[in-house]
Each structure stands twice: as C-alpha cells, then as structure tokens.
Image (cartoon, rainbow, N blue to C red):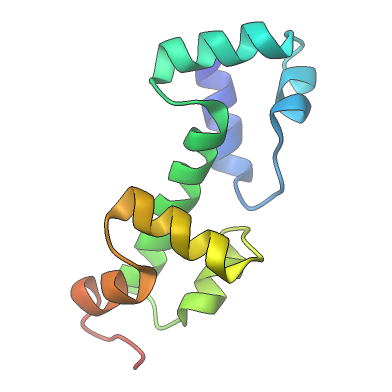
Length: 108
C-alpha cells in the first residue's frame, strides 16, 4: 500500500496534497498511515511530498531555461520563501545557486 501512495504522490505532486486526503483516498486511519509510511520510507508523508517536489524542481533547474519562480509554480509551490527554505533544506543550496551550479544554460 505504501508503494501505491508513493506512486500517487509522484504522479500528483503538483497538486495540493494533504495527509488527510491521502489517508482518506487509501482508506486508512491517519495515525496508522503516518506510522506505516514513516517506517517504510524513513520520511514523514509531508517530508516525502517535499522531497518529490524538490527533485522535480532540481530536474527542471538542471535542464530548462525556466526561472526559479516558474519552476516553483510548476512543482506546486506558491510561496517563494517556503519553496526556497524547503529547497535549501533538502538540496543544501538555494534554487538559484543550484541552477547556477548545475545548468550550463542558466538564465541570469
């Protein structure tokens, strides 16, 4: 069941996903769901969603010519500060630093 949840998150990360929505969709109590998910993935559900979004953002920053703001909206964030903070926490650098380091065609 956790693999199904992971697949669903990876296919729908652009949408606003909540733990309650996911537990309802997969017909499991929230606390049991959170406990099983953490045991299987070593991440909370929210952390996993954030990681999926950041990985998608990293790919876009590496490959595309989109601005950081365009990428932020593409992966489902609407708050620049929240996106920057989560990105830096997971990737270790800011989105701009990441793009400048890994994208040779960076939009400056």
